[in-house]
Structures are given as structure tokens and as C-alpha cells.
Amino acid sequence: MAEDHNPLANRVQQLQGDLQGRDPEQMAAQTGTCLEHGPEEQAYFQFEYWGEPVIYPVGQYLACRTDDSEPLQVIDQAMIAYYFHDSAGSPPTEGWISFSELPDGQFYHQAFQGYTARKLQLGFSTDYAGFESCCRALEGEPVEFATRAFRFQVLPRVSILAACWQGDEDFPPSYQILFNDTVSCHLPTDACAILGSMLTGKLLAAADQ
Image 1 (spheres, one colour):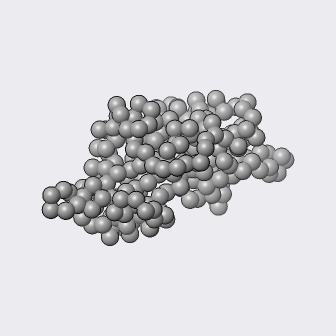
Image 2: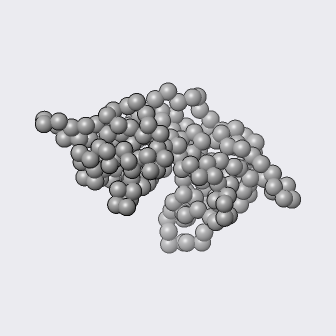
Image 3: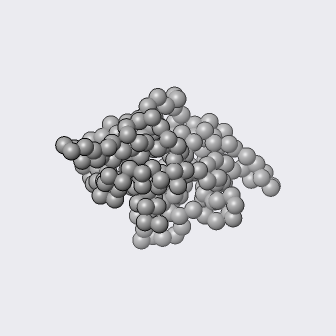
């Protein structure tokens, strides 16, 4: 990951460096991941990311898919590095919060809505069945919230919700990306912004297929 021109790649390297020397057992407890030992006692964390099993070797801190050992993309490396870097443990989640309720989220709320909620509204509008179909295609879990809502487990203790409110003759339909209410115990607000954009992109890409 020597992409010096890529600020995100540089940030990943910084986070990976900060993880060096931390207690793996404590990290596993704080992130809700499994600490395993492979050949030659190489320790690694095992968990699911967006529903796919990955491993995260201690020391190297480069996330790879378990099926072919291929490293994940830089944006995914960033999400996982942020998660292991910032996780401090948390109580069980009890509900959903908006981006504006995250630390400093109110300041960036309008921008976040521009590349999440407004894009979803333009992409799906009144096609509620299409929205549901795309969420199910991405293995979203139906949740009793809004008109239609689907939960996506991104990391062991980070989940995100895509919600739709049906419009009527007076109000247009609306869409929102929400987060589990303990997400700030595990990710900084800028990482949550990236997650919201990622889910929006995944849904719109599914709609184009």
C-alpha cells in the first residue's frame, strides 16, 4: 500500500502503524472479533465485513478475503483500520441515530444528505419495490422501521440502516441512512460518512443491474 499520492492510503498506513504494539487480546474483545493462530503461531483476527469473512493478521494489519487471500481495496482497508484503531467496546445497541447525531455530525449533515439521501431519492423515487429488491439483493435484513428499512452488518459492532418513507400527494418520498447508536464507540464520524456513501453506491449499483 505504497500509494503516496492517495491520502486515504496514507491514512491507512498511519492507522496500521498505530496498531503496532497493541494487545491483540484486548483488541479482539473491543472489536468483537475472534483472535486465531495459524501456522508458525501467526495470530490473526477473523470476522465478517459486509457479510464476507475476512482475516486481519496481527502485525501486518492488511485485511484479506478468506476464500482467495486477496487484500481488500484501500477504502475497505481504511474502514477496518479505523474500526480496530478506534473501537473501545460498547454496550448493546438499542436503536438508530442519524448522521447529525454523531460527534460533529451536525456540521457535515447537509453534505452527507447530498451524497446519500438525495441520491437515493433520485435513484428510487417512488420505486419502493425496487428499493426493497436492491436491499435484499445485498443481503439486507428487514427491520420494522419507516415504510421499508433494511439493516446491513458492516463490522461486528457496526451496522447501518437504509430506510425509506413513502410519499403522498403532499410530500415526496424520502430516504435516510442511519447508524446503530453505539457506532461512535467504534468509528470516527468521517469513517461513518464513508460508510454511508458506500452503502448508497452499492444500492444504486444494484438498481442499475
